[in-house]
Length: 289
Image (tube, rainbow, N blue to C red; front, side, top):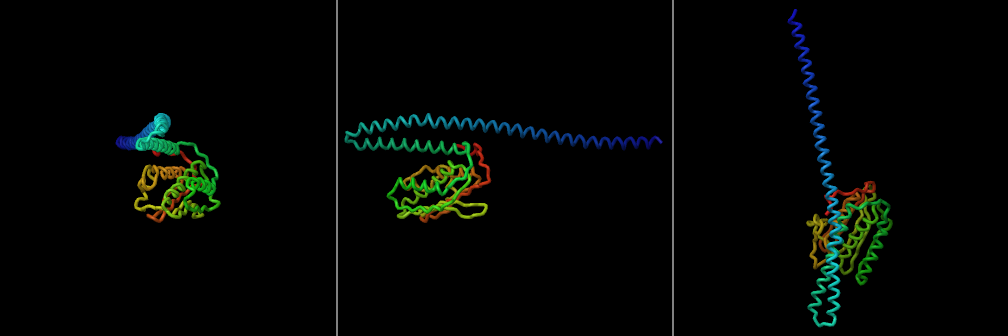
């Protein structure tokens, strides 16, 4: 009679031990999960702190570039102007050319500093969505560009009524860069034609700027939107190679994309989209200078 009681106790004890083992396993798994979450949270907090520090450093760098680097450039430029005035009565054209070259170099460096600062601020500035008339912008920009070289034979074709929902200030930069590029690269075309319009009326509206200028090799299209990337030599077409990188960054902030099609000697077309329902966001510092 005693054996069954022992056997029963063993069965109960085994059952109890099995259940305890399962409970221990569950608790251990939960602890591991909690520990992993704590580790991930600590890592995230660390990365946020690093990002905030990087942003503060970037602000400091921007201030240094804007003030400390510009100050000596301004002094060099003023000195060059004074030297040019002193050289007016001297028959020393070689010396005047040297001074003029220095003055031109300081102006170019100052322009580059401005472009770099503007480029870095695009991802950090606060934005406001509104309905923007891209057609209206294009007309104004076309008139401004034509005024710089009224002797050139260039025709603008601008579709009416093309609007977008985005930040007006940044979208103007997009239009200015794309139309400015079209103007620049039709510089060696006898009769230039520059168009702005839109294709597609569905969910994705594709805005475009097209020209009949120098064009480009599609095999190098991946370099178009890289900062300081140039597909033409500086002595052929002026520029710093940052305009299209600026365009891409702005379009990304609007949830869109930008790409180009072209052929050497037959012009180029730049397309971009804007996601009207996409909340304008601030890009991470990974995209900053």
